[in-house]
Amino acid sequence: NLVLSASATALLFKLSRKMTEGEFLEILHSFCGPIWQMQLGVRKPYDFIHLPWSKLAVVNFTSPKACGLCFEVLKLVAGRPGVCVTDVCEAVQQGLAPNLAHFCAKCQQSSKVSLPLVFIDGHSIPPLLACQLLVSDSLLQQSIAETSAPKQRRLEHKDVLLGRSRQLQGKTDAGLFGMGSTVLIEL
Image (spheres, rainbow, N blue to C red):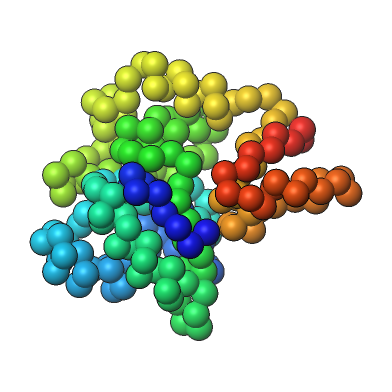
């Protein structure tokens, strides 16, 4: 998807190889750091960095403008030789609290969850403390319900962009590849 919604603050990055949060941040800063500094006057316009799987990064930015700048820059270079980011798209969870709630919900499902990097006013804080401070009980319960729906998986156009689409047992859905389409698949 080449368009980002005006209120977007979070992006998903498909990576060509497994890397640490630190390595990913180096790449992000090498492409976006100068433009963030010039246009926003800040070095770290993000508050949540998470690599939940080996080749996926989730970043929540502190403003839609910071998110948009990163999206524009990385969309231009993604997939080029020597660039570890192969694709970038808008994330489902938008905002620090929803991303933290999603992380907490995943923690309740598995003990093998990697910890995100969380920043408040540019300072790193422990992710579990951030969850306690910023995630309301109702938001956490909503995230738990969304992440633990039995035998169903939410598949959106973002999943297709990230290469996680599946054959739908020989059936096609013309709307599957449309903007914002959602299909529930029994697993």
